[in-house]
Image (cartoon, rainbow, N blue to C red; front, side, top):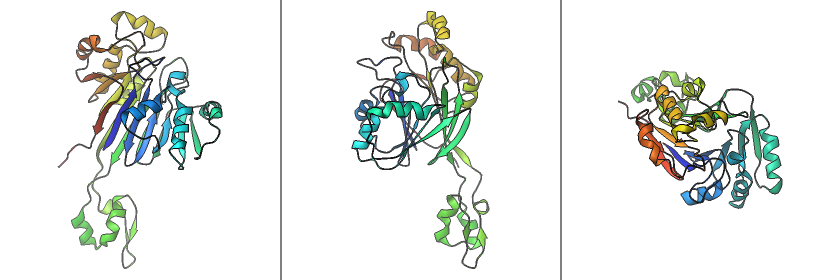
Length: 304
């Protein structure tokens, strides 16, 4: 099960009723944060979650509304007695940018590691398979697709027939090769079925619509995408500022054949997204307006 929380859904500046952009994921006790706008640590506390288990922060780009909450969050993580490493992933220059921000947090009781993205890239972190892909903003910016893969079913009858010791079954299920009591070697392919459908989430913000976004979001269980503007007359402004309208995001969701779309990163000039949702749903029916603290549990499909 993957727990998802849209901590903040605002763009440009925080408002009294809207925190800046941030998304938090929880899986098997390992937490991921995507973006860290100003006030993210407060949004986490409002949700009732803890920042301490965050082990990975993925940064989309270096505009302040996506990264300025980092010093406060990291200080809070330190005060929570975090000691295990934190990995920060982002565009080229992420280490330099983050270290500059963290000059106001010089004493951190845990190591910070950095991974710079130079192009589209896939990496694995503690059960998460993450694809970073470039989008089209006015500075280098990445979207992220997150997959929680699911192994095939374990064939207990076959394991018994092969004489594999019971205490080795869990290792095979984890993908490890094991040795039997008489020195026989057993590999997972002998007792594991074909991989089953996992969980997929795609997050994209601060971009014009691109074919690559639809390709990476394809068949996502949840697609979280920026909709800076809901007003139909704001398309020219969206193009000028390299952002998206609600309607452009909905078209991407339809093209990608996702299960559900959450709109986020709203312009501070838009008091509420609600007046525009009826028109958006005509393009993609299962569209929902993001709001601070909006959560969902994504689980594996039930299969025979």
